[in-house]
Image (tube, rainbow, N blue to C red; front, side, top):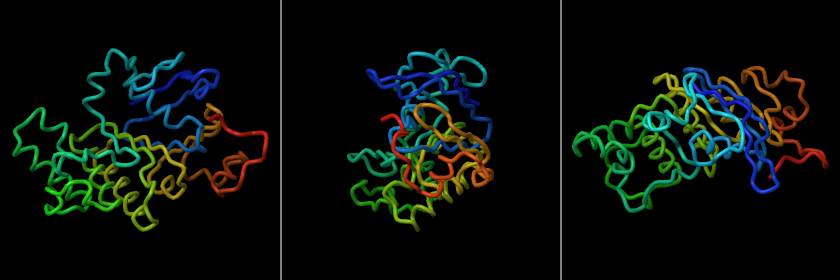
Length: 245
């Protein structure tokens, strides 16, 4: 579905991505992990065209993404780290934001209510404004917006940040269920190992701008890489080997 080849991105003298090679298969849920400042968000932003790499290329279905970007952007969904709902719009309009460009209001609202129900929010939420929602409800509304147009690729940016363990587990379960039901390909960036185990089929560890380890989620615990083991266990990394900021 998506292939990243030799992707390099710097900010001034600091090289954040240093020749990244990564693939996302059709229907696969890939989780990218790594400490703060290791380039996870920059990788995602580069795929979305929000950052311009100095080197490397991104392929979509085997062809360069650049000439296909308009079509690609029509077929992706995204759950932002803090949901990123529009405060001035009621919840249903947030969910139907993209749909309202292409269909009558009544049809867009009906789809919005359907997607809200899929993430566990009832019709009574539809006309509320985001300020009236709890953190968990905002995440759910953001997830409903991400799947409103039935995307083929979904990006999840730190989906459980700011949630307590119970609500985080509920969001992880929702994401895994939606990916399985729709057959969408998914990329999640996170440092939450519970999310990794709940959401992912495969995991890639970013360290100092490079993929340090990748493999099936089920293989993480048997991996020989010391940093991966420390990351999983939450152990401090020794001085002298910090990741790029």
